[in-house]
Image 1 (tube, rainbow, N blue to C red):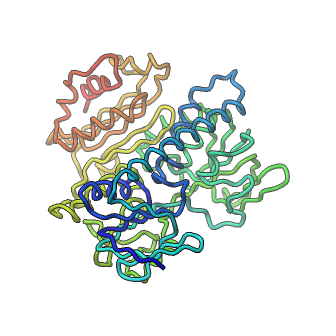
Image 2: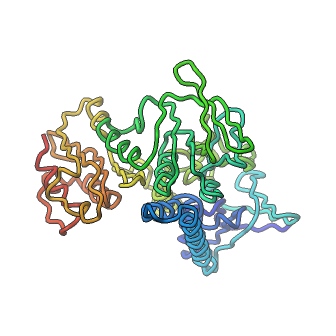
Image 3: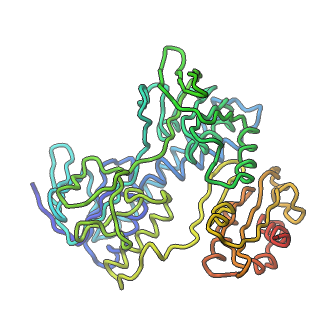
Length: 457
């Protein structure tokens, strides 16, 4: 078995790892980047998550009623695959051109402190390093019920993107963000979608008024919700899959051509041999880290989804900055530096949020003023009407004493862009009155801030 020593080993091609490897390599550090799956070069985001699903969502929204569902979906999947192939190639080229970065294909396993064995078939490579970065991401979790196994008509969020034939009926088990994005997408492609959710209402992390507007959009698209439903089992039969669930002390059945199991994602640590390196794992399977993303093993870091916390590729990107600062900088940057991190649920139109909800702010005892208006009622916001979709809501929560925005929920055309402006204002301490009186391009969705914040109370 050949042995190679490098400055840093990065396990996994995800956003944080690949960016860190490139940054260190360009500084002359010898870096080995290990990936076990050629189809995951570039990471989860560009291959099975953010990019491909948003491409499918875009094409689903573009389908007209007269377009044949199966052929339209097939063309969308083909475009999705072409896009991911191109991005995978470009990601590989970005690091292949960095002379001091060694790209390694194979399964990595810790055999000691900062020591790993990489296996690819009969080939084995022993890597030792001054530092190791665990960047193995996450994978779809499955519910602990009989029949909840991916195969046939039963899917996770990855396999459903290539479902064939297109399902006329889809059952989504789980009412989280992944499940709702895919429910919305397949409804716009033309499927009848039923969401089985254990919670009392859809989008229970959002304020009730925001959740109501988002739920209306989903129902309008053809999504049916069954709340307080507890799935008992899944059976993949000869003609359809059947999901049995308990509701109001009685069992019910629903048939569909496809079933999506969307109950969250779990950190991917199987087979890494973390015990051999002295790396501790939390009860939820996430690698335990401190504010500098250091694990319990000296010289070993964890970044991205595998460490737990928000599962966003832009958070992973910031993870790389923290580790880069620790390895090649002042070592002062930590996760506590993050403030006002936004996110978007890509429904149609998208729902974007940052900071506290009104409920959270009041529960914390904050004295807040709230500005809320449905998009259809905002006169100074013509952009959604131009786009042909005036649905949605704008809600901004403002601290009464400081005039600072503490949270916002935006559901409208371009909300995934406008939320970044609001988040920046929160981080920079820009008063809500500055957003209210801002001079914005016209016609744009940003103009909603002029009118809505003018009615804050």
